[in-house]
Length: 188
Image (tube, rainbow, N blue to C red; front, side, top):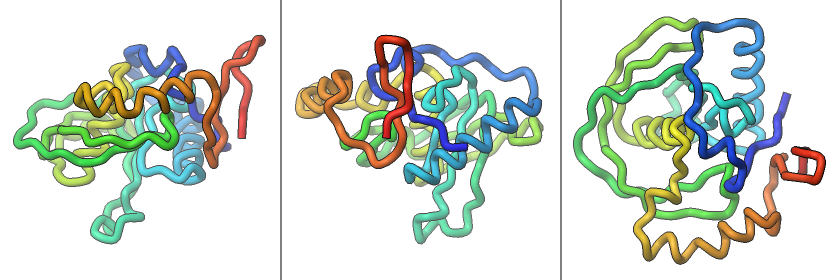
């Protein structure tokens, strides 16, 4: 089921997500919904807070990129970055911040401990686009957005767009959650 994506001004995107203690049918359903929502948007990564759940869970699939066609979709639960090295600047965008992009400097290589879709623990090193997307989504689990990492001058350049999103003046080609007088309602 496609779920509305939470937007820039939503409080859940600023909360530290809660670790999962295991996987049950509800978590499996959430994972399926997140993947379907991500593909529909279309995106290459989605964190649970973007789907309205403050859990330490993310999904990603970068196989739509030619050089990563061989990479299988990933489900990442309770990720912890153990180490990093090097730095690389790259333009990022976010489904929770439609239409906004900016250059973000992140570590080029990370070592990550996490649990997979079977809740089995894994430790792996990631580089390139996988490292980038993982770090972007892990930021969501820590209540941080890519615009928080922009240099001040770059943040000033997109501030009007951020204000427009917060006030509901934006366009998205996928369903988003909006704040109404009675709570959240789907839009799009």
